[in-house]
Image 1 (cartoon, rainbow, N blue to C red):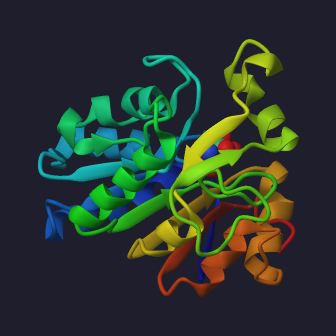
Image 2: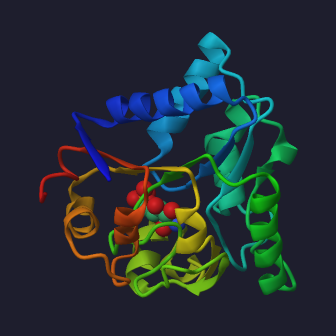
Length: 241
Ligand code: GLP
């Protein structure tokens, strides 16, 4: 695991965008793994700026979102499908039909999860997966205790995660209890994993997953086993290392 500590979010966005740009220049039909949350936003801003100014081309790229809430009506502004579209994919020239999200509204959720796994495989797997980390060490929505071998499936959110995410909704009551998320086994198959964490509220989770034991209680610790994992931190998130 390579840990890089940078002064701020601007520099994090640039370094991550460098990795994505060099991937796309060598492999225009690369498969990107996208994450929601505030951590990846500087990356999306930088990629959108490079698309605008230098013509960074996403026209052949594919993208897979990590996770989705269950039970939000289609088009809900806080559904991750909408968030990814608003924050990133609508700002570059990736084809909308090449942007995939788990279907949190499917009548048969387990079947939809399997189809999602199948589609990732059919497109050759994820080349570069962007990740944030929850204050409880979750990646995607793999809450503490998630199996390291898990695949895309339904999960329940713990209260801490619902509280953390309540800022995006009008009230805590509106935060869904259930989600669909790529599993840790799915995420581990991405060829390069790039995790971003910023702010003092992430310092403990960062310490746990970077320096602590590899343990299911801290899902992100599984990245210690990944052959190509890059962790981009600001000084506050790195302050407990
Ligand atoms: C959500 C998402 C995660 C994300 C986490 C942290 O729970 N499912 O993928 O990493 O939030 O979000 P933030 O970056 O806003 O702290």
